[in-house]
Image (cartoon, rainbow, N blue to C red; front, side, top):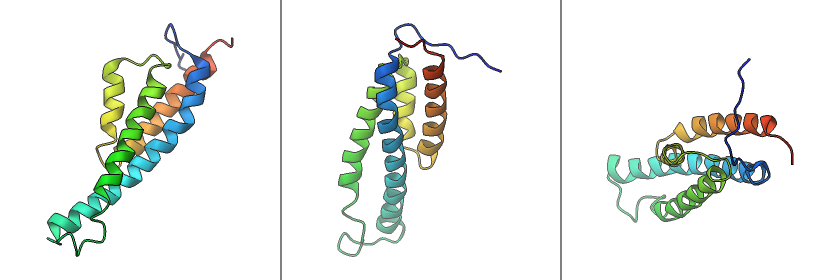
Length: 121
């Protein structure tokens, strides 16, 4: 059995509120990134023009969704007292296909363990 340490300044209330939004955004960004890979395959692999590519509209919305994901990571990371390198690593995980699903699972599990170990106020 491992012991979970809670960092000093950990805000359980804000972290608990931020976790569901982070989970949703990590999933949405993961799916969006897979759609972007398909769009890029159409554009560069199959050399489709913008008029031929059925997903040519997707990069713009994907960029906006990714920015919301960055905000969700910051919204969770600051009250959970993550270090800046950890926050940046979680943010960059949204740039690698399938990695966002793995990182979301690991992060959520760690935060949930910290929430259980945190003293109630």
